[in-house]
Image (cartoon, rainbow, N blue to C red; front, top):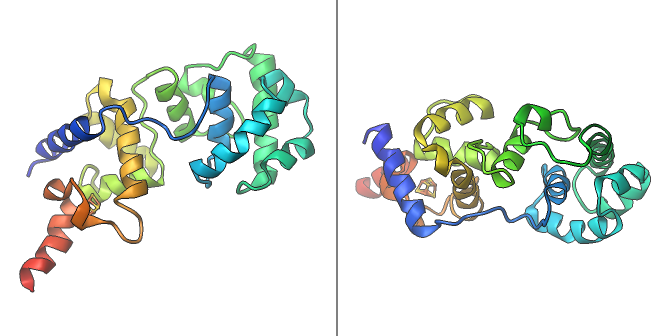
Length: 219
Ligand code: SF4
């Protein structure tokens, strides 16, 4: 199977089965998504969704969050991973958003990355989810699933994987493709035990063809 055929089939599969995949983080404004994305580093969306309601009720705007101390923020987010760092990032992000961006979340990926706690992956999430830009965030799930299926080849970094993926995915589908791959990695193509027998992509998956199918044939 050529790489183009593989992409075409995977995209067709997801368009049929998950046409409207979206983030599992709960938010109602771009500012709220920024807060949730900062909290979600190395933490589950489920945990983040438990933390954000009280935090955002107390600090509904960037200006209000900027006025909080890191100690006060810490108290709301201490059940999250890395609460000390994230308290600093949240305060720093809120200060910059309020003072330099007049509380308007920028759509530009470079500007987003100026905000504390926002790296390229998080900037791509904001740009694609809020502004529907063709920015593909590569997290650990997207990185692993893409390599296993054979969508990427020997990508050494998330940026390499991102560059390979966006060459083959139509621009209009890049925002949703991020969610397809994340959700597939979270629930089916899991890191330690991929659920290959129940996976709808197995016919098009390089890992399955090479490792699972061959071992079944040899028995
Ligand atoms: S067949 Fe297995 S390795 Fe391939 S995508 Fe599905 S779960 Fe992952």
